[in-house]
Image (tube, rainbow, N blue to C red; front, side):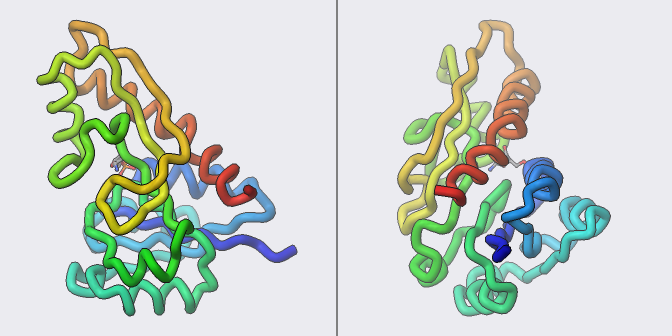
Length: 190
Ligand code: GRF
C-alpha cells in the first residue's frame, strides 16, 4: 500500500501535533513523515521524538524560505501538511507548491477573530472582551491570504457568562483534540 505522507508544522507545546501522531499511528494508509518547527526549544520536538517521529528544526530565516520548506517536504515525499500551532507565516511559493494540501487549525470561528495577531490566547481574550456567547475552531485550507482559505469544517462551543480564559482554552482544546485528526483523515481520503 502506498501511504499518504503528512508533515506537521508546530511551534510550541504541540498537543495537537501529539494527538495527530497518536491517531495516525493506528491508520495504515497515512504516515506522519516528520514534525517541523521553527523553535528548537519547542516542547513538541521532545514529544515527537519520544513517539518515534522525525523532527526538523529550522531557524526563522529558513522557515521563511519556501525553497527550504519545499526541499524538506519533497525529500520525504510529503503529500499533505498540517499546521497545528505553527506561528510563522507560510511563504507564498510554498503554498503554491502544495495548493489545497495545507490544512490549518485556527482557534476561532473564522472569519471572526482571524488575521494578524490573532493566535493563541489573543483570540480567546478578544472573544471574551466582546462578550461572545459562543466560539469554536476552524479547520481550513491555507491560501495566500492569512486565515482566509476555504473552510473545511467548524465546530462550536458555548461560552458561559462566568467563563475565564482558562475555561475557554479548555473548551477549544477539547474541540481541537476531538475533531482535528478525524477531519484531517477525511480530508486526505476525499
Ligand atoms: C491551538 O489552539 C491551535 O488552534 C492554535 O495554536 C494552538 C496550539 O496548541 N493554532 P498546541 O501547541 O497544539 O497545544
